[in-house]
Length: 337
Image 1 (spheres, one colour):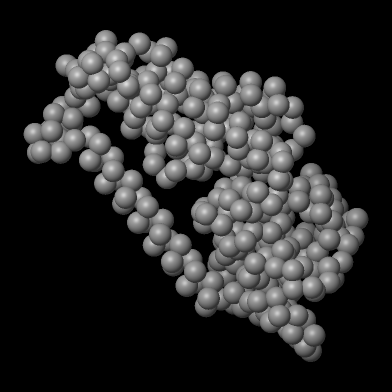
Image 2 (image 1 turned 180 degrees about the vertical axis):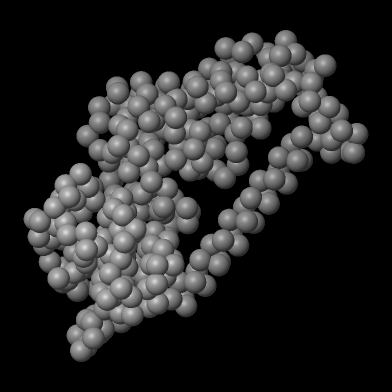
């Protein structure tokens, strides 16, 4: 049973897949999976060739990811920080992506499209590294082919069920496009509400660079945690004076001695999403006074406040943490002396 008129499928079917996938991979918050599923039903109905639809999807992914990769290579961390401004989840996703790529290497790119958020940040993140372009393109091609094939084959396998759903939608005077638009608008509304809630949280709990400087000059200075990824600390080996480097891969221990202290957490993210996540983890572990630094380390430097070099002994790779006294380990961090 055809889901879309044959003439329509033959005239713009592949183009619809190309535009939908390209928009999604460029960051438009509209999922491409529904279009790929419909493309799979067209293939099963005999209204479109599989390889034509697959080629359109893969080409769109390669174009979008190449643009992201080039931007990461040209502008580095500044570009990643600009991405964080547009999405609250990208900050945390970047941290996860760094950790996974450090552990599994570039082949992880073949699976990144299947993980929400990871597919968008992988290309610009890898652009900031020394990976060869041909290696990136090879694994991106493998990943794009696997991702598009998965959804299209799923659509072909569920052809009958999807056909009944489309018939039901049409019987009620609407179209599949109407449903997709409503889902997209609902998703955008949800993201906007999350952003408003996040801004309200920041206004309530964050601390400005000026306030932190004043606290550091007081008789009871706060404990400061450097929440930047280890890779960035190695590339930019400086910190706010006295800050403690957080290691998110270490055991969840903490020193009760600091539970009642004022704690300030900072990273390099413009909207402090990672700092907020870590602050909540610390609160759950018994730390009662935890606040993220507004604007992170970038804002601290822009205000003209000094930084200090990170001591060599604090730049150990995660595998070298056996030398740390585990009785003096806070939650995912070495306690200050």
